[in-house]
Length: 271
Image 1 (tube, helix red, strand yellow):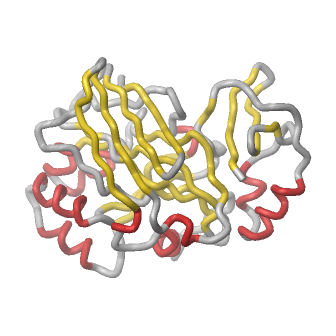
Image 2: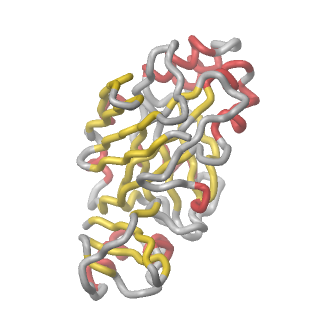
Image 3: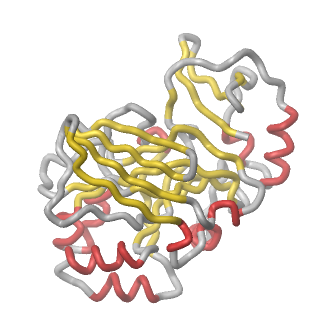
């Protein structure tokens, strides 16, 4: 099953497999339930006409979006290269406890076709293509979507305590185009991830990886996140990036970022 969220003249509507779900449906209703119950309920909901209208980020405003860092070896090496305090990234990659940080409430996330931004006080900005896990109140993976964890590498590299400013600002996170509902967490273990960046008609960068390269599995990261935190309406966890553009690259307004995770494609302009 595949969930999408749309903007219509009557307001925001959710759809499943291209057909409208009942008016007023909210993702939060499903994510309050155990994953198996939520999937079963979704199959029983009546479907309406074919859905239409612009796609929005596939979550409700009250869902929190979190992110994990240094979950791929490539990310560890890149962070060590940029950082003035280098050994902390080696330590967190090798540690049992992962790096987890708050990215924003659901209303802060932009959706397909909406602009992501670069900080005006940063000189080195990159997209981070990531598998984003949608999980239930009981910390069970319910599905996945595409995440773009836009980051200011120079700010993070200057001082690790600047991480929130490097990661959390207007337009720094994108999700979409929809949620692939899964039956087992293992369905996320070997998904292909691809990043393509264009400036006008020029291809600036292309990179690929797979979630099989992650040191920690997505379900493990979700369990760590929920150790001392409640998520009454479920949430979304971006699971880190294994694709890092070269050090001489920085996003600029007008660029176009395309990210593929499995069969999903998320595209955003840069402003």
